[in-house]
Structures are given as C-alpha cells and as structure tokens.
Image (cartoon, rainbow, N blue to C red; front, side):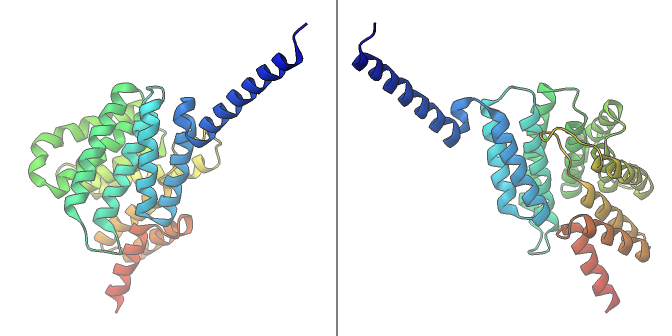
Amino acid sequence: MMKKSTLLKKISIFYFLSVTLVAFCTGEPAFCNDSSILLRQGIDSFHKAYNAWDEKNFEESLSLFKKASQIGTKDGLAEYWSGTVYFFLSLHNLFSLEKAPDKVRGIENAEKGIEILTKSIELSPGFSESYALRGVLRGILIKMKPFSAFTQGPKVGKDREKALTLDAYNPRVHYLTGVSFWFAPEILGGSDKALGHLFEAEQLFEKEVQTPKNDLLPSWGQSTCLAFMGDIYLAQKQNEKAYGYYQKALQVNPSDPLALRGMKKMDGMNQ
C-alpha cells in the first residue's frame, strides 16, 4: 500500500500541473493551440468596429486574426478575416466622416488585403468570399491608382467570376461584385451592373438574417450594401431613392459611415 506522504506528494504535483495548464489556456490561447478562441475574439472585436465604425477595434481584430493564423489549422479562415478587416480599414481611410481621406493608407491597406486574401485562396480555393473581397480591393486600388488598371484590371474580372461560380447565393459575393462594378471604369462596370448585383444581395441578406450559421463564418455587409445603393442613386441624381436606401442602411447599423456620409451630402445639397 502506498504511503500517505507519497500519495499526497503525487496529488500535489498533479494539482500544480493542472492549475498551470488552465492558467496557460485562459491567459494565452496560443498555449492551447486553439485558434477558434482567437477567431471568436477577433470576430467580436470586428463586429464592434463595424457597428461603431471604430478604427481601434478594427486594428484589434486584425491583431487577433493574425495570431489565429499563426497557431491554427491552415484552412484560410483567419486569413479571410484579416482580408475583411483590411477592406474595411481601406474604406475607413477613404470615406471617413471624421477626417479627410487618407489615400496613402487606403492604398496600403488595399494592397495588404489583396496579399492576405491571396494566401487565403491558396489555403482554401473553394471559399467564394475571398475571391469577391480580393476583386473589390483590386477595384479600389485601380480607383486610387489608375495606372494599376494594366495589372489589376484583368484580375478583377477573374476574381468576380470565380466568386459567383463558387456561390451564386451568397449575399456578400453579390454585394462585393456590385461594389467592384461600381468602382470600375464605366466601360468595364457601371451603375446598372452594380445595382443588379446589389439588388440580389439585398434580397439574400434578408434571408441570411433569418438563417442560423456557424459563428466563425461571416455575416457582415448588409448596411454597407444598402449604403452603396444609396451612393449609386445619389450619383444618378435620384435623390428620393438615395435617401430611402441611406435610411434602410441606418436602420440596420446607425453608425454606417457610407450612409452617414451620404445623408450629410444630401443635407448640404438641400441648404
């Protein structure tokens, strides 16, 4: 029979090791090699940033997604989320109400987004949204740097077509395809093509809201989709329709920056 002192010693060692492991797992998920914890934290931070249009939370979510990418399974999901943040950081740089557009940072974030989404596609070539996001970031790059159309232009169309081929019923694919057409030169895109996809996205977003899904998968985009529709109608001087879509966007997200910027433009026009 084991002596009492020896048994107590073994129990003490086991307890110490158990407590140490728990401390590692709760204090720093990397020790547990569980990227899903970091992904969930990053997604929570991303949604806070999206809803409040807060650059600090966008940067925080990006940091968490990068850590998840380093320790997790190589399925491309963490890289996809990083690319999503770069897309919104680029929009934040270029369309913020709080300060003048920062084209240098807008271009830099677009280029970083293209790079990380290319990695996501290499890891998971069947995920439609990575292609759609990369295509619209290439469109933004062309808008900011017109000479890049020679290298990026043909790739935009390929990304767009691939995304639609992989998942024609994804609201973000149609939303981002519409934005891609809107950013493109008129001869390659135009408002009619953009609105066609944005209308489709509007309907698909309404269905998605009512459909439960894995919390690690994307569910963003509805308010910015509606706001972009407002922008197109405003450019067409269809002010009543523009106002209606800005209102719809603000009902989904009262802090949507594109909708707020559009409403501010309309207020200035009416003065």
